[in-house]
Image 1 (tube, rainbow, N blue to C red):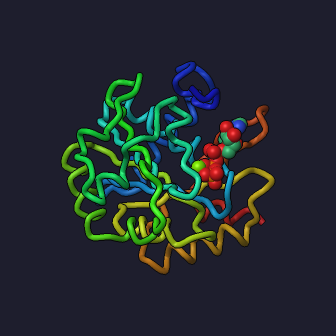
Image 2 (image 1 turned 135 degrees about the vertical axis):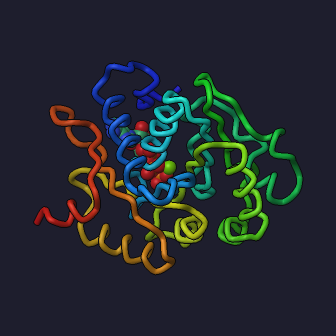
Length: 226
Ligand SMILES: Nc1ncnc2c1ncn2[C@@H]1O[C@H](COP(=O)(O)OP(=O)(O)OP(=O)(O)O)[C@@H](O)[C@H]1O
Ligand SMILES: [Mg+2]
């Protein structure tokens, strides 16, 4: 299992505490609508999307929620690696009608946490993610799980994150400390606004370890910092 799955390693670590805070902030980010389906993306590759969503999923499951984590990053799927599970039979196989949901869902060491890997990589990920079948299955997942977390590719690179955001209740943007440029975050927000997605916040990842490793802020708070 990935060493960065900190919420699994020590409940008392600062990282685990940061994810409990993130979990609570998401819960309170929208009092009128429930945050049941959340997409995670970033402006560019390697800013920590898969690490953050895997920790968030673990943290939510540990709080007693029945959580489904879906790897929808067909371009660079890594969730299976983080949890040490195979990427055979996953979302793509369900959408094309090759397998049933129950044949593809993978349980984890963490009670209440289930994972759906990408499965067989398709030649046309955007089409697959925007298909009617995807919307139908997402609705089925919502019936079975309390929370559905979706790992998406970077929003400035391909349209997949925008497509996925349309069917989600909210989107979280991950930014990497000292690396992600402010203009990239603003552009990402514009892209998400374009499809009517609700940006629920920005997770500032890879903050040097003397401060918190993960930091969550409302995006407008982030803009305030000139
Ligand atoms: N807070 C952190 N502290 C230390 N290492 C981290 C942290 N977050 C992520 N990493 C490491 O950085 C690398 C990239 O992280 P991750 O795979 O989560 O990014 P990603 O945004 O999902 O990348 P991709 O665009 O390829 O999907 C991984 O090796 C991961 O273990
Ligand atoms: Mg990733």
